[in-house]
Amino acid sequence: MAVSAIPAPLLATMDDVRKQGTEFNGDDSPSETYYGYLTEIEQVQYKEGGPILQSVQLELVPFEWIEAAVMNLGDSVRDLPPPAPVTLLVFDDAPLEEVAEALGTTAGDIAEGDWYILTVPSHSGRSAKRARPVFDTTVIPLKAAGRKLTGPKLTRLRRRYKPIARIDLAKLIKMLMAIQPREVGVMDTGQASCNLIYDANGTPQIYVDAGLPMFPNFASMPPANALGNVEIINPGPCLANNPPGILTHFHWDHYSMLGMSANAAALRNRDWIFPPQVAGPFLAGVILGINGSPNGQVHIFPAGLGVLPGGYVNIIQCVPGAGVAPGDLNNTGLAVIVHLDIPNNRDMLLPGDAAFQSIPGLGGFGGLRWMTATHHGSATNLVPPPAPLAAPPIPAPYAANQGRLAYSYGVNGGVPGGVHCYGHPNPAAVAAYPVAGWGNFLHVASTAETGPNSGVAGRGNIMMANNVVPPACGVANCPFHVFPKTLQ
Image (cartoon, rainbow, N blue to C red):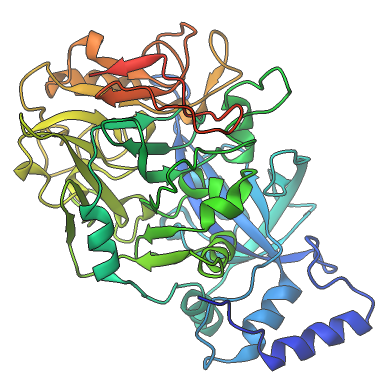
């Protein structure tokens, strides 16, 4: 599918900018004014019983670029805007009220998907850090302040950045039905999520998420090899057998391999199933890159479909459950249930960051043996259980203490001595899983250390179920061929 041509009004505006001697696609706004897309709000609690803070993360696009590429084109243009010059802004961890004040709003009126007009740098704003969306980025400390965008401009931005709902259901069902899953690799990517489903021979079948950490958490990634390469960046994720992919939701730490890894172009050149969510400017560029690739296509999961049954790989549309705010990105994406053990009718749940109560029909799967702890072990919407729930809504395994549970999270600086990103996994959440039947410590593993919050070094990829080591793919230093941890 070809990328749409740049509309004539945008070309005219770009030419006007060129005549003024200003680089149109530069990262920096000549007026130090930016449109900011609030891509994520992450709860932070570094110590049990300590203060609850928030990490507020935005994507910045120069004001002049958005005015030309979106605002000046009117409402008749429906396609995604062209790839924007995006930088990332992360406010220093703080109470949400303080960040909201810097953004000209209140804590009760700040949410993912909001747009702001920001001054960067600002003399009177709140402390933050800015960086380009690349691995070898320079992090710039500064202050930022702004105001919330409302009215017709907000409506126009949301309309333009909502991917058009295209999907080839027949193609997807055929693709999913051909998958014979027997094991799942839960990958050590630091404070991010990446899972790869394999067949009985260790041949890659399909990705579920392909994320790298946000730049403040780069120190949580696996250490560089002898050549100085962090292998999940270079060479990047394994592409043996050309596996397609499923993206659970539109958070940076679940999709950013598609934009940052050395083999990102090849990773985009395949079918991807995306949830029906509104994209930010960076992901919009990724979507255009996928659809502009010879064999790439983004399939937007139909909002009203509910479940896409694909033989042994079932995709479920998440719907915010008890206690979950409407529109929450973690809980309006996709969850995946994989049937790994056919003779014994045993399944694996890959919830992404969704609260368990936001996964419809989950209680009907009585054969759960393998699972990843939701949201990197977060306690959000889990502990304490939101009303009217009387207990944390963790699904039970097929038999008490027989489930296998994997935690995927990052520790900046590694263990011992490093800082757990956002305080993941939350101790209260770690304690809740055994109560729900996931209680045998021999059946629990984490990517960042020997066990959740153990403080003992021993990081690495986790292989769930069949425990067949994937054969060499022919790419030197491919990061997904060593699995020091297994949960059969």
